[in-house]
Length: 316
Length: 268
Ligand SMILES: Nc1ncnc2c1ncn2[C@@H]1O[C@H](COP(=O)(O)OP(=O)(O)O)[C@@H](O)[C@H]1O
Ligand SMILES: [Mg+2]
Image 1 (spheres, rainbow over the protein chains, first blue to last red):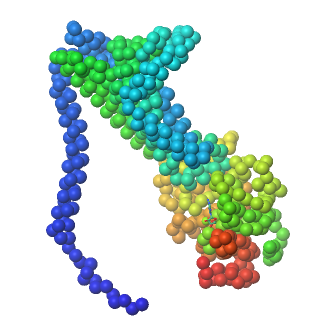
Image 2: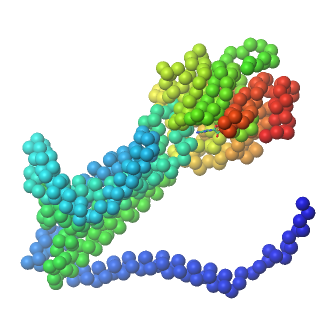
Image 3: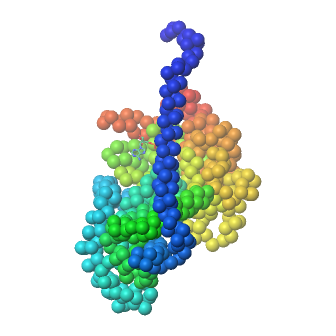
């Protein structure tokens, strides 16, 4: 047990030239990547703005408040599409938030045996892997026929409510909203579940130890503790719903007017872009670019709002 | 096994465990524990890691029910009622028997809401401000937090958080308080404050405290139970109660060799 003391001089080893350049190279590389992401975003924004410039000049801010979209007369306004974007996303959230958070709870608690939960987590994640166009087709061939029944009933029984004052003829706001709800479900479920299962188990024990029931623990301790993650999930889902294109184009009916009834056809900005770009020219292209810019800003607004809400709820 | 406790006067018991065996699945974690816990006194559980102190402690408020493969045989009587009777509602049990954990675990809520939580879910009708103040005072925390009741409980220091957890447990007005190594995450000064607090609390509550710290046991406890662990023939480890007596007896004239070795630090 008598090992010689290590030579203290050995701890002095200045970094070699190679070490230094490796460090510096790594720093520059990460800097480059970080800037590249910001750069791409900025570049897209600039390009879209440049392309939109003629339309911005000819319609100005009136573009946002104008309801006609008439390529023949070269009159463009996107109020109906902004309305459609917001309402379809809202319908999706109203349906998907309770179901998504509920599923997240089911998957984070032990109501079901672990093997079943594992399979369910996998299934929910598979939902996210289905291509958008498949959702569109499924919507046309499966969902719309079902919703026609539901919509017919809503119209005949609750037709006095403005939201249901037209019959559902086929495509419309409701089918688009329902499919969007299914598409954003995995986002809400996965992120909410992650934030619920990453809560310290001590919280649950503290609550139960004070004589709280399971439900009191879930609703008064666990969900409030995970709320910033859940709100983040909802906001991410909202962004996704606002930007979704293919499935919405196939299901919303592409009607460029505002109808208060959610059973009537409508349109969203993303769907307008997808359906008109192929045969657009001149000022119409520019107006589509302007519409894209507005969608960009709307999404940005939602994300900033999300960040603010998350910061606010985190503070407690 | 029964213990001849060297007490001077007869005392009222709060808990009375009778031949309690605890299994986690097939694994026997505690064998045949019989112990009486006395009212308005502090009882310390000491013993090497893994001998089942926490397991036994959690049997008294049925917190082990959360563990899927937990299984208990035997009886724990609390005020003439077997806690493990199928008729007993574990939620009601936990309302009467508070718990303080090893790691301070305040809710991510304000200091006020932390203390008010238990009372609110129990449908407390009285003046909540008064209850919060009273509980924080009993936990010797009021003066430090009275100006920041709306701030998060997580913003307090470790020692303050632990006293907040004690205030939170007291606010439910329990009958007994279980503490599982409440000072192991605290600095020496906070530890002393919590110990002083335990001294005051025993006037109104019956307290069981698990501790790894011999001095702490001798400072705060009236009664001390020493647990040990022995290997089973199937390769498992099972805990058992070696000796239970008044604290000074355990520390000065224990009857068992193992106790003597443990308290004098020659073991574990
Ligand atoms: N949830 C559990 N599942 C299975 N075994 C457990 C569980 N909790 C504790 N044990 C086992 O029970 C024994 C006693 O543990 P514990 O009560 O935590 O001891 P102590 O608190 O005295 O250190 C240990 O062998 C431990 O591995
Ligand atoms: Mg323990």
